[in-house]
Length: 289
Length: 122
Image (cartoon, rainbow over all chains, first blue to last red; front, side, top):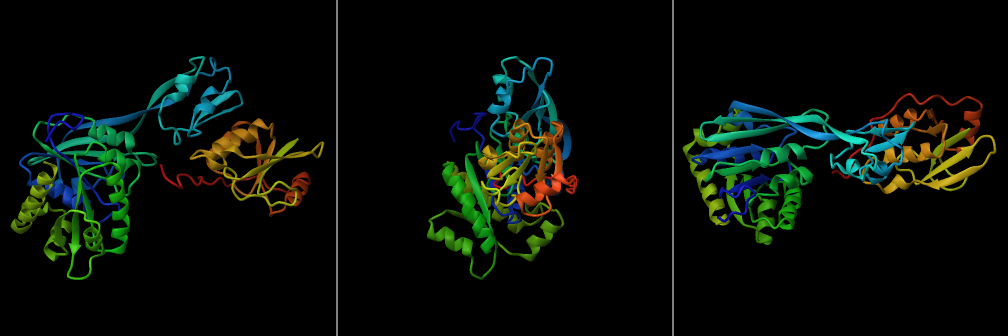
């Protein structure tokens, strides 16, 4: 593995995504993390992070995530509207001889401050969420949590991923559902993408979307077929037809379902599934090298 | 007095448009001169913040009152911040609503919806 990550310390960054929620991203992520000797699990699903329910980390560090919001000094503002015209998101308005800032719409780009000829615009911090770091045996657990009512989790995901990781440790990125900005931010620096899907029409529909996304990002990728039964699997059929690498097939199994419902790490409880996930990890590692 | 309405065509027979921020056209009506001007809404295709941009445009027309079926929160903040009064239209007809407004029969818009934001995502 060459230094293709931003941190450049030679660890593998593996992103796990699915499009559809509930296909098994988190199960695959936490269990892959747990079968490694040393690993980092990052929960980028900042709107509803749930990896901690399985890993139950002991928290050692907590930090706030802040973004910058424009703030206008009305005494300096001459009403030229350069900022209003510049803002592509329409987060600013000029009424009653004052600039109004719509914080929910603002993307914190800082452009308004740059274009203001009077230097009337400064920036103030706004807290939008937090990051918790802890450990669960061999796994360092980093969780992003977005405050209720905030519009975008992207700055929190940047805060989760823009950090140094110990050399030689694998990093598992549990992505949010969907295929929009927050998912793109989560996979941006990944060395490999694991797509988790299920044998349903809905699962296949969203799988196609994330598959298109990883192709667009030129990310090497493979598929975990979860909840497999003896019946027809539209997702598997699609992978075969499109020559997409299948990394593992996880059965629709009572034992697995029960451990999962109890919030257990499957590989710490079941020898059989420890083997399944160890093989999956091997397959992923082999694919990247 | 200047009153402005979101409308779906450039004639006085057009209907009041249901959307404020995304309406194609605004009718700017001067109650003293009875002059009516139809102006294209620049915010119609904006990716986000259409209500804010449309409201800014309406304020810049020296509007004193807006007649609309409903208005989103951000747009309402801009309009009320500029001292524009908001009234609820009673039906589709432009003429009827202007007449009702002049007779003092239109109700003040009291329910501000949260806006139809992020359709199309970001």
